[in-house]
Length: 280
Ligand SMILES: Cc1cc2nc3c(=O)[nH]c(=O)nc-3n(C[C@H](O)[C@H](O)[C@H](O)COP(=O)(O)OP(=O)(O)OC[C@H]3O[C@@H](n4cnc5c(N)ncnc54)[C@H](O)[C@@H]3O)c2cc1C
Ligand code: FES
Figure 1 (cartoon, helix red, strand yellow):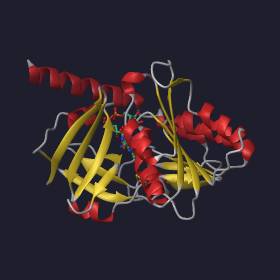
Figure 2 (cartoon, rainbow, N blue to C red):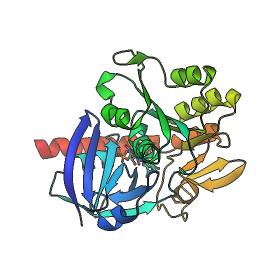
Figure 3 (cartoon, rainbow, N blue to C red):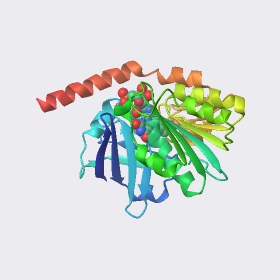
Figure 4 (tube, protein in one colour):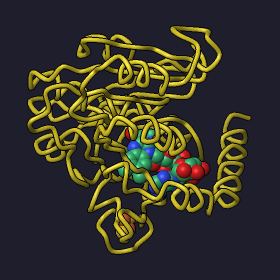
């Protein structure tokens, strides 16, 4: 069983936990993910490895409470255990040979981007980070990004914190100003990653995106996470989650991501009703 060693609320909808999982902690690298089940009857959900402490045997996860399983996970407390915590899965983010990188994170995507930024910084790469949120209340990990970035732009859609605007604005300004990035790494909502690619395209900068489609087995068997990349079918769980942003068919990925929304809304409602009954 995988014990919850620490738990911290980062904002009203995002929680960070350290989980005791020594075998995962031993091998995990930034960009990889785990699949967990909260309890024996629970569904499997993928979450990115947001950090690890190999000596303590712990793995950090940061998750947004969006539906039934993340609600259930958020109700677990320090000392309680998760039924399964399987990984590390997927390919680690390529960090070799990068001298200057712009990391663009949107919302909870910043949790996935942070360990990549930290690893690049530790390798001596100059990291420029642009992190964006809908508003100040949803801001997460600002201090952590500041610690590993030579330059940090914080954006909010409504201007309630940092600069008002979207994450592509500082990226465009930097590129127009002559910044020469070896790579732009974008992690966040599909539409954000699509626009980061469009912003970088005229400058010919390589863009890596992290794709998070629905995953079931996480081992390349079920086909649930398939994407079209460069005209071929790829499985995000084994071929990714990172892909060349110029090759990804974002429109198809967005359409597929909406496929289960009715089912998910029903499950969310059932979970809410269950929790309400428990409280009464
Ligand atoms: C490789 C990968 C890494 C991820 N890392 C993180 C992370 O670090 N932090 C984080 O907050 N979220 C992450 N996600 C998304 C996370 O898996 C979903 O938010 C979670 O599964 C939602 O489950 P739910 O039952 O609470 O919500 P639901 O109501 O079931 O779903 C809400 C939304 O979550 C997504 N989702 C649901 N089930 C899955 C599934 N089995 N696989 C993938 N997406 C799903 C869909 O977009 C869906 O619309 C990651 C997804 C993938 C594929
Ligand atoms: S999750 Fe089943 S093939 Fe990727």
